[in-house]
Every structure is written in structure tokens, then in C-alpha cells.
Amino acid sequence: MIRFLLNNRLKSEAALDPNTTLLNYLRRDLGRCGTKEGCASGDCGACTVVLAEPHDGELRYRSVNACLTLVSALHGRQLITVEDLKQNGRLHGVQQAMVDCHGSQCGFCTPGFVMSMFCLQKNSADYRREAAQQALAGNLCRCTGYRPILAAAQQACERQTPDGFDLERQRTLRQLQAIEPAKSQEAAGKRCLMPQTLDELAALYRQHPQAKLLAGGTDLALEITQRHQDLPLLIALGQVAELKRTQRADGRLTIGAGATLSDLYPLLEGYHPAFGELLARFASQQIRNQGTLGGNIANASPIGDGAPLLLALDAQLMLRCGERRRALPLRQFFLGYRQTALQPGEFIESISLPADAPADFRAWKVSKRREDDISAVCGAFNLTIEQGVVREARVAFGGMAATPQRALRCEQRLVGQPWRRATVELAAQALAQDFTPLSDFRASSAYRLLVAQNLLRRYFIALTAPQTAIEVTAHEPR
Image (cartoon, rainbow, N blue to C red; front, side, top):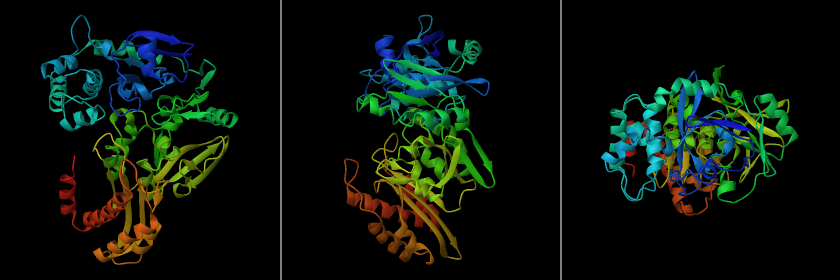
């Protein structure tokens, strides 16, 4: 059974199919049709809703894509939809701002924008245009344009006054804290097991190695929404607090595999600025609020943005099966397209990387859209240069092969050589021996190879002429 607050009303669901998405639950079961289905893949933001949860003694608000959120994620949280905003016959401040600033035309995308804006308002004491762009980057509008919508966000944040959610905040917090952890959810011949500890998770997964592990679900949910498959047995990881912890010890930063990308952003931005900068372009705010770094690695996508950076940083994985743990370098983890070294019943417990950022670590993502898009090529570079000579080199790419992969021949051309343009050109040519990328709707093979070579050249410029590199970044197509 799952228990949650629907706005301010406690709800219990004992017979809800665990494969049900929050979007379908809202529209079909509750008749709340303000939340729209635009893409069913987390790309448009029309289905955005807000989940509030206890965090450090306060309420934390997170925008999520309802189409990618399975109903088990509701347990212990408050669900807020666009229907909940209007109170006492008056529009909420974010709704009124959309009216005042003419931010809506056909209106299909408007509820999603409103909910993203509501979440921005709750999480921002002061308006910052950059924060507004981040919050709204996962919402697409096909007719109005974004200037009036950003103007609405500014008005909503600058003129905000306490609303019903603020007045009820402490009561809501107490209600959520009183909800006991769930153990399972079963209906329609399907089950979702909900362990509370790492040991319990390890025991359950060893007992049921055929189960699908559900962390953020931003990739797994596509099997339901896009491929129309049934997932008979799920193990949800959301209640396992140990999987969300991070710590620094012995010069290493250890990240729990269940930590969300939103939670990791300030951490990685502080320890590894290049990682934090790229993470800001990782999908959308809604995806980052749910997606986990462990899930991004475990799904073994060749275009996952986390893996190339972790490969360049020589990250290590801690894998667990039952009571047995084993450490594995990430470079040995990917075996083939969507294939990994994970054994039956084994899962990623944590990811370890250097705590101190290498001085010359850089990473860049190239995609058709700057925000909310999948990489055509993602490149990460980590060279150690001493007295003008390359002593060590780790160069990794996503989007260039069946797996995220180190460019070993390129690295060989760099190590032991003077750090100058001629060396970089030879290393760039070696990339053609490292990779034979595919052509698809995102990019052709020739384009991908050229981009990879140009990213290496950009890295050289970034290290030898930083001001030029800044100018290149400033003039990237948006």
C-alpha cells in the first residue's frame, strides 16, 4: 500500500498497478486532466507536477515529469497538480503572472509551465534569470515563445506572497513525517517491493534477480510508456537512505548510486566545476530531480552524459550481490551495447572518484538543443602535463561507440609528447582509429568524428589560450 497527500488530503492506494504512471493515475483514476500528455517520454514538460517531501526538517519541492513517474514514488510525499493552485476562487500568483504577461496561447503546455514556475517560486527567495531558465528548460512551448513566459516567472518570484501551501507547511510536514515506510505494492498480478535498508535491498535482489530496479525511473519508465511492456516485478530504491549518501574520505568522493542528479549538482560543482557545468545541461530539471547517477551508469546507454566524465576521472564502482561486495573500475564495466559486468542479483552501491578536481579536467556536450536534449557527442578530457610534456592522458567520449569509451589510441599519441598543436593534431587523427561512430537522426558518423576531433582541439585551446576558449563558449549556437 502507498500513502501520500493529494494536496492536503491523505490518500491510500492498496490496489494500484505498480506499472501505472502518475500521469495515467491523475487523468484516468482521479479525473485530473489539467496535467497533459505531450510526449510520454519526459521531453516536453506538459505533464509536470510537483512533489513535496520532508528534507532536513523542512519541505522540499521538486518538479517531476508525471509520464515518467511510477505511482510507488508517491509514497510519503505530497502531490500538487495545477488543479490545486487556485484557492478561494483566486488564481495563484504564478497563474496570474501567466495571464498578466500573456504567457499562454493554445494553453496545452501552460499547466506544465505553471507547475515548474510554482516549484521555482517555492525554492527561490530571489529571482534570478539563470535559475528561471534552468527551471523552465524542460518545458517546451510551440506557439507563444519564451520571452513572456520568462517575464511571468520574474513577476511570480518578485511579487510572491504567502499562499495556502505556505500557511499549511508545518501541518503538511507533520502529516508526511507520520507516514510509515511502505513494504510493497501489489495489484493486477504485478508487484513492487520497497526495501528500507541496503541489506534488505541486497537480500531481495539476490532472491529476485529477474526484478527491475527502480531508482529515478526516467529510463525504465520508457519500457512502459514507449515500448508498452509490462514489468511484473519491481524493486523500488527510493526508501534506501544509504544509497543517497555522499562522503569524502582518503582523497576520494564516494557517491551513493541512488543520489539524484539535482542533489549532486552543488556537490560536483564544488569539487569538479567542469562536471557541475555539464550536469546543468543534463536533460531537464524535472529529469535531474528524479534521475540518479547510478541509474545513468547502470543503463549502459552509449549517450549517457555521466559515463564519459567518470571514465576520464578514472572512477571506481562498488558492486554488491547479497553480502558480497567487489570494486570494479568503471572502464571495465561496459561490455557492449546496453551490456554491463553486473552479475545476476548484483547492483551498483556507490561510485568513487577523486575528491580534488584535476587542474586540467574539462568536459563538453554537443547536442541540437542546448537544454533538455540528448548528446550527439559528449567528450571529457583529463591530462596531466608537467614541464610542457603530457605525462598521463584520459580521454573519453559518449555517442561515439556502442558504449561510453576511452580513446586509447588517442591517449597513446598524447602520452610522453610535448603539449603543442602538432601533438594534438596527431592525437585527433588517432580518434578515427578509436571510433567508427554510427549515423542516426542526431548526427552522421562523419559529423560525430569531426566534433570529437574539434573537442580535443578545443581542449588544447582551453589550456593554452583560456580567453579564446571562453569566447568560443560564448558564441556557441543556442
